[in-house]
Amino acid sequence: MENLLRPIYQERASHPNTLAVIMIERRNKTSSLTDNFDAALLVIVKDADEPVFIKHYEFDHQTASLHVVTDSQIQEWILLGTNRRIIDWIVNGRVLFDRNEYVAELIDRLNTFPFAERKLKIGLEYGKLIRRYVEGKAFFEANQFLDAYNAVVHALHHLARIEVIDRGFHPETTVWSQVRQMEPQVYKLYSELIESHESLEKRLELLFLANDFLIHSKAEIGSAHLFEVMKEKDIWQFGELLQHHDLKHFTQDLGVMLDYLTDKGLINVCQIETKGQAVYHRGYSFKKGVDSDS
Image (cartoon, rainbow, N blue to C red; front, top):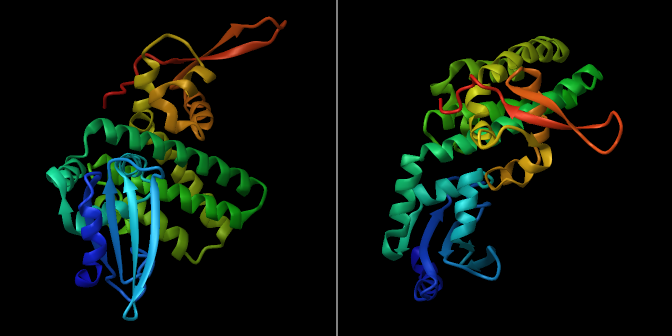
């Protein structure tokens, strides 16, 4: 396969804009890792008009895909976890070209997983966990058990990723095999939800009780990034938090996260006068005594 792809990747490697070329070969008959192509070529470039550009090839009854991705897009995928297979590609792919040890340095960063990045990723997963939990509970109370089940499965996935990240690892696409070794309690919750012979309503009822405890127990590490930002001044309005550079990735879940942390007494709320009579802005403040550096 490499010989067939050589003309394609050698042309790309000759460009000064190219940082690395990595080849990923299909491991199984059905492979989501390569979208069922026999191979995928990842070409990482400094910059481009489009952050992601993809081409498909076919030759001698074999198929391949070419993915030209900017460095900034790679960094965003790694930081936000929005393309989890990219880590597999970088760590386990075959490096065909590596300018100035770009790939080596990227792998070293993935292995060290800096604490600040872990804290941010845990915060993002925690916000998603709370949202899915709240959605699931609303569906459950409306007797929409299948929708509640779907929301709870997603919530457990976010909880699983928090456990993995908190231990200094990046969540893989097969996150439950990681969690089974790292945190059997969370794995047991998941397996009981999908394997139990109890009625769906009963399974969900039991899971919401356990989930409520687990979400609360993760509040300190889950809110550490948010609390670090909130320490910068005494009182914040919601719009100010939304506009803060270090919270730009929290936009979708920040509201429900603040509501949960307020309900649990981890954030204080105050009233800020407006021009309207008896109408106030809501102000949020970091509650002293909550350790955001844990």
